[in-house]
Image (cartoon, rainbow, N blue to C red):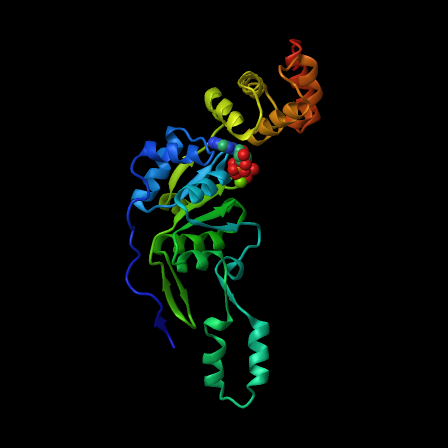
Length: 302
Ligand SMILES: Nc1ncnc2c1ncn2[C@@H]1O[C@H](COP(=O)(O)OP(=O)(O)OP(=O)(O)O)[C@@H](O)[C@H]1O
Ligand SMILES: [Mg+2]
């Protein structure tokens, strides 16, 4: 028994945003500070009904962008957290075998045909994030987080769904989206994604923010911080990022450092305090040593 569960191609629907600037301002309203590049891609993703592939260093606001767009548009956020070994049954759907077995035992008198129709019905279906996003009657932001961790086969499955916005369930039929979800795929670049997936997506690289924007992010996300301290933190972090480190401090680490300084009652950072708290910002001893030397004005050895 195969049937169309919903018919017709998904409609792009009314635009969610009026302009690129409306995206930027809207995001700022939910405490996400985007630059022109980020707002522009989000705007186009909506207009062109294309997924966004977001790449960039750790902790630069890739995941947070999808969450913030969901908040801004009043959409439900559906998240597919990727990991090695993620397969269809966890990404798309699976059948509730336990429940099916119980039904088979209970209905021993039924013909196999009747039973089959019964146990492969909606009642026994366990929808996973991708199917949920396709079927949702409400507006959805779909976040496929850390897509570079899945195997190529799973990536192909994603690609299929993102090009058609439909899912075929052999026992039930084809489920087509009635509205196109906004889709964000994030990647830390642990492996190259397929050309096909890249072609399907709009590409957004989020790098460490410019000084101005990082300072604004600190002021927005760290309650009680003074303008002067936010400025100082942003400048020091920026100079630390120019050093040749194993791992540059991310925006989230900058925020942790700023929060630490506020908790310690620091109003203006001196070298001593900076050095004592560097372990919040940097996670390798060699990086901490290098940054300490830099802060004291002593050149680090090569
Ligand atoms: N533009 C921004 N505006 C406001 N907050 C931001 C911004 N960018 C980053 N942040 C802050 O940094 C934190 C980390 O961001 P997020 O978890 O999205 O990073 P990520 O890029 O997904 O990192 P990872 O690659 O490690 O998953 C967020 O929780 C948020 O507090
Ligand atoms: Mg993330």
